[in-house]
Amino acid sequence: MPPDAIPPGAATADAVTMAGVPAWAVSAIVAAGGRMHACGWVPATAGNISVRLDDGRIAITRSGVHKAFLDAEGVMLVDAAGTSQTAGARPSAETLLHCQIYRLFAAAGAVVHGHSVAATVLSMARPGPIVLAGYEMLKVFEGCRTHEVPLEIPVFDNDQDIARLCGVAEPRLAAMLGGTASRPLCYVIRGHGCYAWGPDMDTALARLEGLEFLLACELAKGTLR
Ligand SMILES: [Zn+2]
Image (tube, rainbow, N blue to C red; front, top):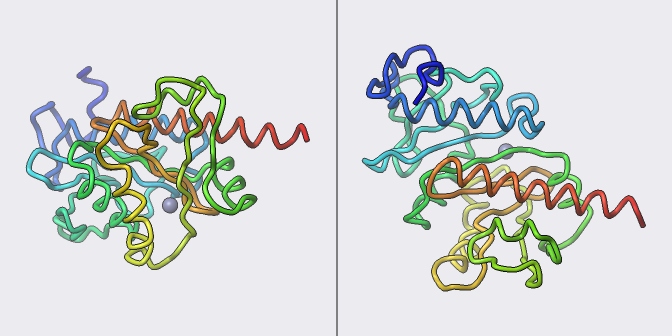
């Protein structure tokens, strides 16, 4: 890890921040925030980003922090149920969606969530799931070997009651577990944004980038009609 990747408050890769978050976790989250901001997916204080630690706790962005200006103070710890493990820090309500993904997907090590224009507009314009077909980029998703097999991206109606939203999402997420069929390992919340995950931050971000590219393509196709 290059020294300049370690944010203030985390002097070495072995260090922990004042909130008890390992430096590597802060670095991964800060870097992801910068990439997502550069893509325009986290306007205002939108979005949240997390990694799972070896002990099962989750390092996640605090509520209300702009992802372009993240530092060690912007990352907190929660337990697997989403309860704050950092004194005085309030997790985002959407932390429960991260916890749900980690609970269901044992191999998940990072979760990213942004609010892009494409995800917001497309999900509001179409009922039901978003079906992606014919794109080479489909191969970014788990088990997808060819552009010839369409992939259905789940879309859940937005809900300020995150526990209820988790309940709606649970059966569809559980259906992504196991097997060899293609699996998106991501979803869209209508009028809101995308969630994507992977075994590490690089994979989660690649999946989100692939999904956002495809949603942008779908949006662009709509302007040709
Ligand atoms: Zn959100």
